[in-house]
Image (cartoon, rainbow, N blue to C red; front, side, top):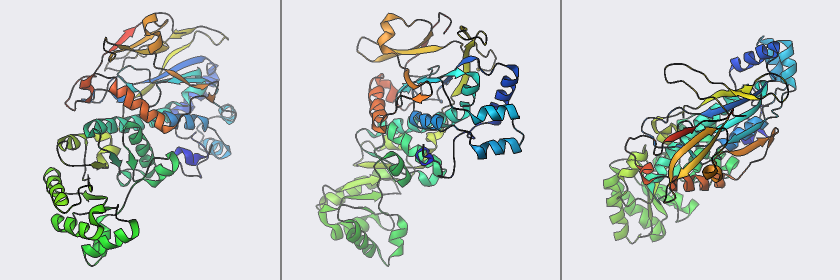
Length: 448
């Protein structure tokens, strides 16, 4: 696996150190105790959605599969662990042969989720599963948070396209992952070329205010851009006087001008004035693109404005106030003993402070109402009720260590659009509220 496909610098040999030290010290102690080989089941879930959110969006699954496949302890990594005295010789030998050989099930990328949904289930020996905790959570927490914000923005935008343009507002590698997640959530294009290169997301971009300021006057700047990029380019019209810029833009490009971009001011008022001016100048087909620190609320407030597309940066790549999905990775079942074929027994953390977990290997299904819309997320252990058998949500992602569920990014994007459309209409409301459907628990069996 080429690490460039993971959004990593090409000189990073593996994802094995994208982890916390206690994963390795737990492995070391389990090897010494003889329990590292016990069959175990870990699950990823969140106990609650961010305040006010009505649903979550699963994103990053494809990146998780790449990361698991590339989780290898090469000579340089092993040398680092030895020199820092993080693990002993026995553990180093075990890590040198590490290849995840278990199974992973999960909600397919783009699907929606709710509190308690078993978003991903990792099964294998304790040793091989526990090592994956941090890298899986770091990907899913980041990407799902961005996808959820993108989904809310896409709902607010309706049929109008959204441009992801947040690369300069976050870490350079996070920017690539954010662009990917935004595309899953409903954005149509990105300004980030690395995201376009790695994930084949359509890219866009023309000019900034610096290009206008470079020239002696706005007319020269517009002429240079049109000469280089064609009449269907997008001209930035708020460097000086907007009305004068629009007039100059149409004079130079003609009615074939592709679009104008507005990046400041009262966007609602300015958009109406610009639309009227463009129409009066005969540029009736010229589009209006607005940017300027938009979020889902600002986008919704512009629903009645003559805006054709939105560009979103800071608020998107920071999850619009919720930069993590608060997912956890918990052991929910383990073998009764170390013997082959020993049955699984449920295990769970029992504590105060809202951190209680529910033990057992779980399934999940979405029950529909009489109109075909989702009415409940049903999570259970043991046999799946017959009426929910064809509504199960988890799919097999990895079998015996081999990835079995790679898919194009457009498949996840289309899946999300369908999943969101299958929720009650109140799911798209931006007002604060509880999850749009409840999570119900059906218990039974040992979870084996």
